Image (cartoon, rainbow, N blue to C red; front, side, top):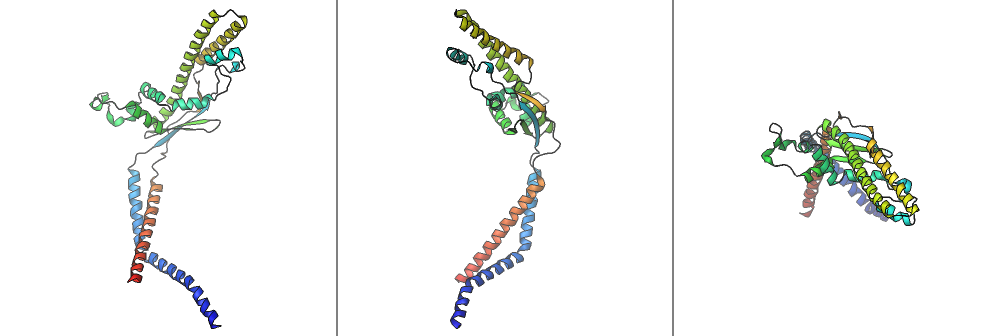
Length: 295
């Protein structure tokens, strides 16, 4: 009977030690709660001060619908001896999403650089370097256009919210944010439309030359059909301003900022201070207790 009690006592020793450790930990935390509160408050205050000194960012969103088109799609059934010529001038028997291609173009360096230049956007990207009174750059040092394109790309986001696309721009000025979001869609429509007109006109010239070379009736009929399709593309591009994306809801200057979130940043900073102070207090208590056991 005594042996049994002895074994029970031995088996319960680790549990008692764990309980004692938990009690000691609780006492350490309770005794240091004031320090932890002060540390947390200091972190929260500094987090808030840091947050309110960050630039205010607004987000403007334009909702657009992609206009899917496959060049010469009506000729996609061409095969055999005509398919080589059709592919040569831009015909394809594959249906490709023009929306994905147009989005890739919008985010490309060449397009963004042209958009910045034609829209006089460089001064808005670098307002601190632009002398408004003298209408020139400070020290006559114009910023790098490629760097400006990278800055604009970082402020531009495109969300694939099927069937719509959301063209969003984040900027320090809500008016400029909305202006860029709308203008970049209009500029892309114009860019794609002019590109398609040039491609169609070049194809027509090529087909007309091929038409003069051939004497076969079948080839002539095929070439006439191709010329007709390309002519339709030119007419369509000339009359349709919204060529790549159609506005469903244009961007308007936002009233509310999206960042910085001062209250949230202060709360997160306070929480970080609380966790850090708790770690330091427990670490000090552990090292102090360890030294006592050692010596």
